[in-house]
Length: 81
Length: 132
Image 1 (cartoon, one colour):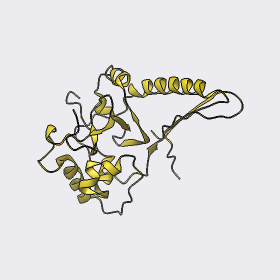
Image 2 (image 1 turned 120 degrees about the vertical axis):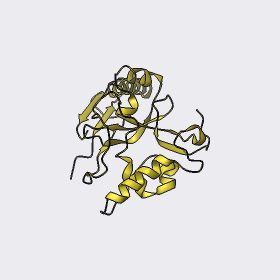
Image 3 (image 1 turned 90 degrees about the vertical axis):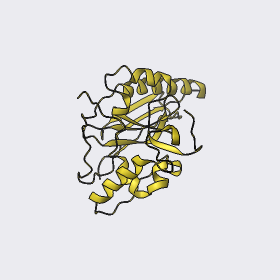
Image 4 (image 1 turned 90 degrees about the horizontal axis):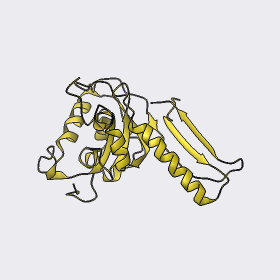
């Protein structure tokens, strides 16, 4: 099966909820700042519709706060873009 | 711009605060959809504007369908949806199963052309760089 996970950012930690929210918001802003500067698109003069069907490619962007032991874990995995 | 038809979503809108980041244009020109579209704010728009090429060339955004305020509104339909659907339908013979989509229930293209519009969607880029 093709990798359908283009990007996943997870914030988990055994910390008070308001702290997790602050951290999550900070990670979200930092991640969005990086995404905003992405420029991977080719120079498109005309877009062909005749290319073979692609396997589904999805970019999963999900930032959630959660409680686990072991403190704060920020995990970023790239691929599929 | 406010939606002229409240509740209907344009899947190829502009980089405007309040709109949703729907996908990222990949190096092959196709759009990688975000499983969960992200509302964009002014900070994102400002950051995106620092890049030479417009955000609408690099990303896909969803926003309110503004009907008569859009150059692609024919008076009753979105001509972009019809055009891309027509092209893809004419060149695709394989069966197609639409993938999950966060905006489908309110999507203008879906309401006009159903699954055929979904098939075309990932091929669509809002803008191209005429200076390239």
